[in-house]
Image (cartoon, rainbow, N blue to C red):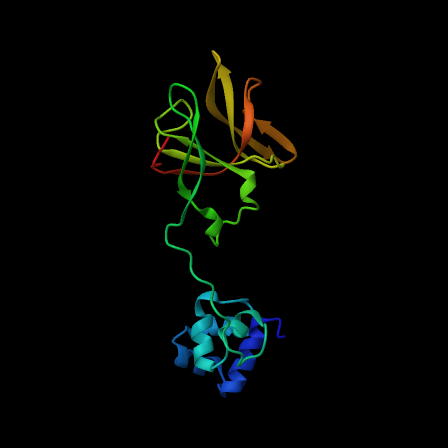
Length: 206
């Protein structure tokens, strides 16, 4: 396996008979100075140009990008792209401005299909929905909350008891060096760390 992209690019050029970065620049339309930086190892992996370089040199884009396999291996089957706006059904706790909280089953953004965001375990997460503006949140706010409390800064969802009713609130935990600062007050009961907060119009079916 060629561990460095520059080595794999040099091998691909050799196999194709492309002798210089200038020639490869003419073949691909990629700026010559950029290709020089690739060839010298100053850029490790040009993700946006891998397919163009692979096509120009006739090698596998997967091999050129990763070094796995051989230059002429067939491309691995691509995984199916997730839908543009994936959603899933789950239990959501609705927090109205007045009255008791209640649970519904509703569609929420399915971040578990996202390539950019990889939560660890669906069972660790809960959803809270604020349909109308309250003291701490504006209306149509959906919060994805991780119940397992791991160390680290962030915004945390909490509630406090007021006249026998639960009121939703939040507090911030920040670090400066080894010093920890929290805006939590003694009457707050922590629910969990807010992982995602977004505007979302929930279809509430009780």
